[in-house]
Structures are given as structure tokens and as C-alpha cells.
Length: 225
Image 1 (cartoon, rainbow, N blue to C red):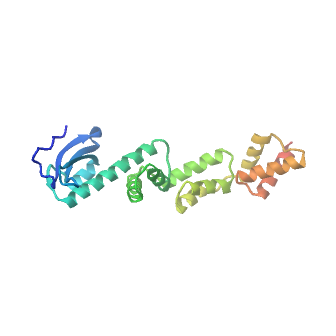
Image 2 (cartoon, rainbow, N blue to C red; image 1 turned 90 degrees about the vertical axis):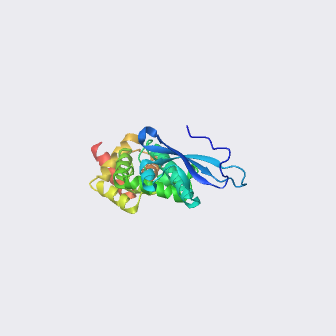
Image 3 (spheres, rainbow, N blue to C red; image 1 turned 60 degrees about the vertical axis):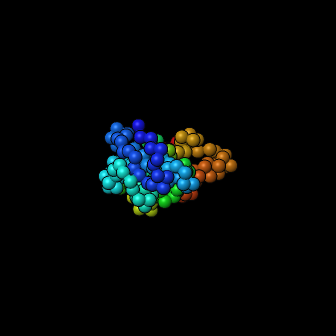
């Protein structure tokens, strides 16, 4: 436990009261004494730092300047955002932009969210190209067409380069046959009623297929009938 502040601790003094291991050695807990805005009594603030932050900042118990205290508090805020980002990634891979959005939605300021996602990308927690390709392949298995897959990747915040890389991985896809599978799954066969055929065309276009691809798929199904 962190030591209590002595009764005569100067209310205008910044000091590191204690540094102790936490999180199975992945982080350290820092307890900092900060001046009371009203000048009555120093306040205790507790936060975590990554081990590398702790080493880089050279944290040790004892008095620190107000600038150093601010630096430590900012590092603690970043550490919290990074840890929250890792937890969010545990629910599934996502783009850096999407993760930053989720962090800000949980109350992290934009600058800290951006720094946290940059750190996670640098450390390999976020792999834009691999994640975009994985999502594109999942969309393909849903029976989606090229346009909708591309739109989905953009909507999830992947960079232009990651989107193009993912679409390149699907470049050998037979979109007509993919559309055939989507039609068979939804309708079985081509509807005989003209109105129902128009509805089928609209449904396939919503899945991301253009008119020519849907018509070609319909011809293939009728030919094999």
C-alpha cells in the first residue's frame, strides 16, 4: 500500500510517493502527491505506467517538479488508453481508425486515442493489411459483391492502402459465380414472375453486384436448370 501523506507534507509540493509492480509485471503503479488547488492539503493520485514508460521516464520516489508531475500524469493517461485499446482488440481485430473512434466514445480524448492506436500499431497489435484482408474474405463468404466489400472496408476505417491490398487479394474471385451462389441461397432458382425478378436484381445490387454481373449470374442459373 502507498504510504499516507505526513500531516506536515507541504500542500504545494509534487512528489512520487511510491512505485510498485502491477499487472503481472507488465505495468507499475505510481502514487503521486499533487498540490491542492486551494493550498490546504496535497492530493494523492494513483495511476499505472507501462514498464517501458517507467524506464523511459526514470520514475523514482521523491520530490519532482510540477512539469515532471504533469509528464507522469500524461503518461498514465496514455497507459490507460493503451490498456483499454488492448481490451477492445480482444473482441476482434479492427482498424486503427475504428479503434481510436471506440476509445473516444469511451471518454478518451482524441489526442490520447490517436497516440494509443499509434503505439498499438507500432507494437503489432493492429495489422491494417492483414485485418482488412481477413474482413474482406469474411464479407466474400457472406455472398457480398465487390462494391459492398470495398464500402464495408472503408466504413470500418481502413486506410486506402489496406483496402486496395485486401481487394487485390480477392482479384481472382469469379464475381459472377459468387452472385450465382448468393441467388441460389436466397431464391433457389430465378423467379418466373417479372416483378419478382426485379426484386431479385435489386437485392443482389444491395449486396454489391452490378447489373451486368447479376444478369450473367441469372443466365448461368437458367442455363443449368
